[in-house]
Image (tube, rainbow, N blue to C red; front, side):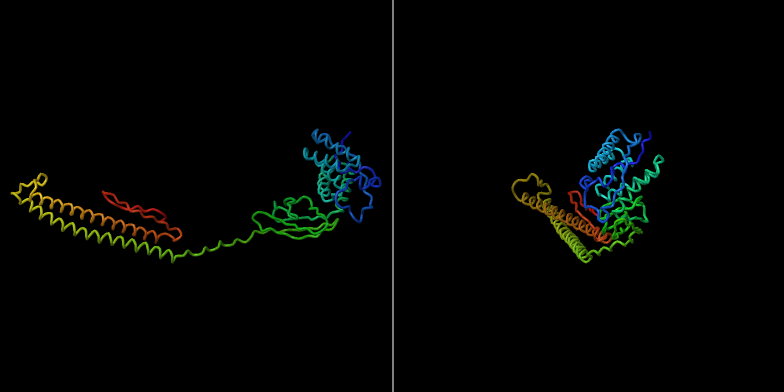
Length: 362
């Protein structure tokens, strides 16, 4: 015996005259205007054995048994558990039918729409089964509105009342409870679009969205840097460097003259020492007396000469270091943007020479 795949009919048992609201376990507000219209009488179908796993089939049959006792909430829970294990369209028919009996019309329309569409593709389904499924779907559609959403860009997210319901292109309409709603379409790289809709029970409207890329705006022009402050800072550094260079050179010249004058005095004193006792004076081994006094004076003059010579040398070195540092800073300040300029000049002085070390952004 062939097992049929029709499921939305499995939840309707008996005539509506034998089903009271308490037996149907309704959830939400009862429908108005057609509450006295009799519902169609559903038949009982079994799950197709080859299409489901053993666990899913067991849960499916538990839903069938619960629906036969008009325990629609229990039947719905069993069908949902079966769907979690096996994504077979027949299970959606059972879920949607129970939701219809529980007056959850929007959910019922969503699930039954998929069920009816997939049933049309099933070559084993009969015309009677398709007709019964379509009648159950029409019952759910009579209580909700539908919006057919189209977008010019595929893969755009369709957002209804702040919740994403799918991506374009949508196979089925978006089912909504009667009343006002907001429908939006969003896609990365495109300007989002939004519209307000008002749907009535059983109505169907269409909304098309032409998504466009937002205009490319030029980046804002950055404010010019405070060049006046940078210039004043540069001038101050250059003035200080020039003053240090000049001071070093002047001090070097002064100490050079002093060293030269002391050198002449050393030569004269050396002549005086050499003339004592016919040039036989040893300033390293003298007894107390005049020769010792002359040697001490000569030694003092020699120390003064060496001191002035060293002072002159290091004054010129310091002035040269200041000059090179100032020159380097000036070159860097002219070749770098003020906001990028960063220069550090460090003078290097040692007993055997001198120089500078410069680093930063040039």
